[in-house]
Image 1 (cartoon, rainbow, N blue to C red):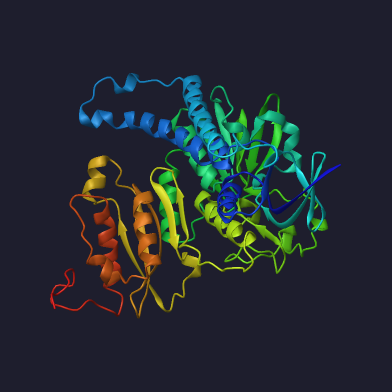
Image 2 (cartoon, rainbow, N blue to C red):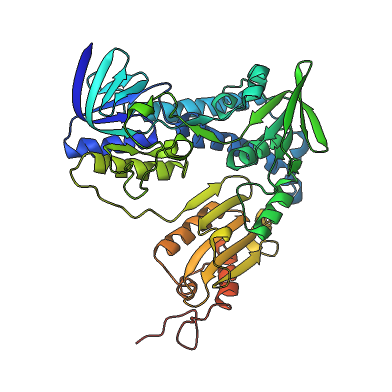
Length: 469
């Protein structure tokens, strides 16, 4: 059997693996990249990009419902060709995948890139296909896969996941969404707006991962206008002819398809990781340092969705960079992680920035808020729904976090994440320019409400301006 020796072996050519590869290449160390399954990253193939294509079609088609307000005639006659819509999603998906592959592994030689599933034989020895690879350092970036309960697998292709949803050639007539986190909400709202009879279920009492009670209440009310949401009970599935009956508590619905949106499972189970000589930790996910991505004090590093911590592309990129840097150097370097930022691209956007509501010390923190209903720019856009909540340390006025559901939340969330990372005070944010009329004025109003509750105020007779010295 052929055996190769390298400084660094990277298992997985998704986002984390490719970012790790960039660091290893730059170091000049010898390496090999191993990938089992489809190429093209989760984001490009079955995640961020095809879902946003579907969301865009749904949002644009949904706008026909407000065109009558503007005097647009004939808007009620607009129809949607579901087959063409899904074809467009798939065309864009293929474009994004091709770009990833062409910019990463397309021109790599067999000495540098192997397609196949790796497994550990010894702590430093891997086997893939008929090749054994002895590596000084190993990066595990094998990603994750959708969770499907074993009892549901008997229903075959009537159970969808994001791995299969974007392969549909036409839209189903009816769909149940089980699990109303980010993916469930995005797909559920999009399908409902495209004319699919959609029903959502979640055993939690909240949706979208929200834990600020005011934002969660607004989200349930707003998203519930697009499709019914049944919360607080686990869903069960049974077969009725060629359809599926989904039951949760007192609610039941008969549908053509079910989207299982129950989260994702790290791809660790086929690595024979028990041979890696490391502590497998809780739920077989090895304990690692998020500032170094190193597992214990071993030669093995984790990166990306496989660690089940922050399953987001920008986080996978950062973890890949950290793992690649440390795997290709003699000294382990710890890195400060960026401010947490999560965006759900439903309409209006649901966003979390910095500290969550449940993470606040409520005796030392204060909250500012604004309701979107009277915001002028949002009213003109016909998108004046939602609420923005911002959190700060009461004594210092330092901004801590935010949860919101509002139009253009994706933009506001970025502004707040940058400010939190710079450890800015609320008063300093209010000294920044705010144009009129823009959605940012809604954030400004929330900040004013927050500013009235903090102890640290700006100096000078006009708090919005900096006095000249």
